[in-house]
Length: 461
Image 1: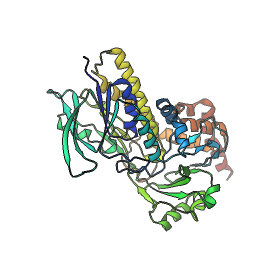
Image 2: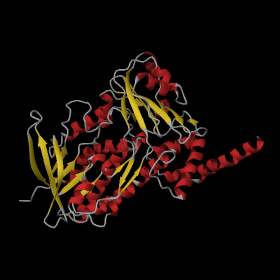
Image 3: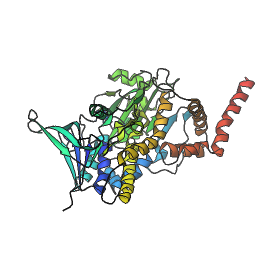
Image 4: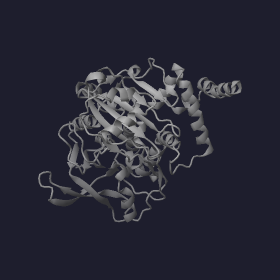
């Protein structure tokens, strides 16, 4: 009788949930090991402290999630998540208001993080080979005698109804996936096993944000969604106001260079008033708040270079924020988690074609190397933006990157007056098209032409 194949996922974050959807296709049994107890309805939990803040699912991410869970979009809308026509969203870009036009993009689904996580957990529970092991904290990696292969994890767990009762157990698996987020302990675990831990690149623009949810009544009933971009180093403040399920509006204010939005009501409103457009302030100054003001400042970009390790154990992979975490204000996190899972699926399919009997030799290292390449574009976007803040630390940009930053500034100036360029920029922003599109001759001529226009204006003065 053939042995049952087993995969373990550390962490029930979105990255872990999406990975489990993929692994359920390739393994007989998938175990999601999560230290929290999942709520029985959409609600916050300790393991996702940023869940109460604004979350954006880019078009590319929405497409992948719909492939993983057919009908998910309809289910979210049925649960009250608003579907927004992109034309209804105002975007105050670093160069001013972007044009209102009909972009060739799918509608955006706006929801709380609690709702989308709950909905995906519900869909995963329909798979008989996916198991949620709640209230369990992974304490280390198990290996074979030579420590060349990871064979499972050691776990400490507690009972939901008797939290003081602590037990320990070992869980064995063919593949261990760390989706434990920025607090991942894999670097320490590898070091304890005699491996060199990965080097880390940390770039911090000291961005913080604060969020409050309001009842949809009064002036808010007639408010249009708005996103106000920061424009460092000169403009460090931004924000957004969007509807979510439950007939509510979610408002997030953010600031870089330690220009943090206050968590008291008067300070929060004053911060909104200082934005370059009064839209958000006017919408909320007399609105009925239904939550406290929640603050979050863990926004540093952190890249762990597992792909560069000289030695790497078999049967262990790291995904999501456990390997590459971006400043959340750019809205890339959920979509990149979906891209990670999609790549995992493709890599496992190729591995199975190469080794039909299920051998995973070489898979882990190859996957980490491919994942590093996948993360290059969103990582570069995040750090190029954060490096603009005067107080940013850790950024060491080469000449090519600095020139690219200057070029994108020129593109943004074109965006506010050219619907076609705005369309291309939004397609890149939503990860539908490659950033190479922005360097096409038709856009480059208009962007670089800004330099000529600017110099002519200066001469006239």
